[in-house]
Length: 141
Image 1: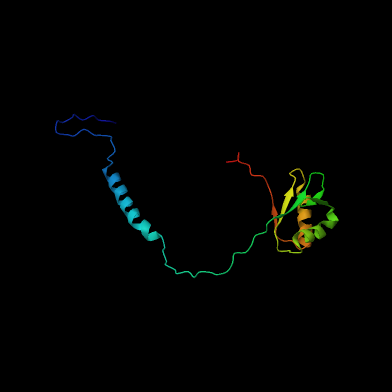
Image 2: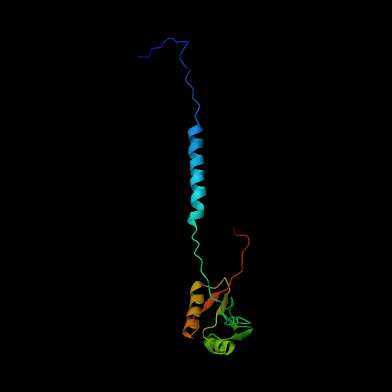
């Protein structure tokens, strides 16, 4: 049951607007807190580091590439090799430096298992620093 009361002249009319003044006050307080706290959040420890006199380590002038072609043939650098002779060819190309990085270029049509088998062959030969080479695709965001 609803009753409508008569409107008196001294009553205020109800408004449905949001009072944003408290909201602005809270935002200004938060802004001040973050402005004060932000410089304190960075840790700045002064350290007097020593200078080094060691020469920088020379990088390999020409990297060693192992190419695994779509027809399952292998090449070390520009020379074609048989899969059985890959270890000897790598030893000749790296002068038996097993710590040198070997860059593996494999055709994308090769099965994953065959590429992994070649990587296992390289690991058994003593070359544990094997990096895969790919083309950079600039169309991917």
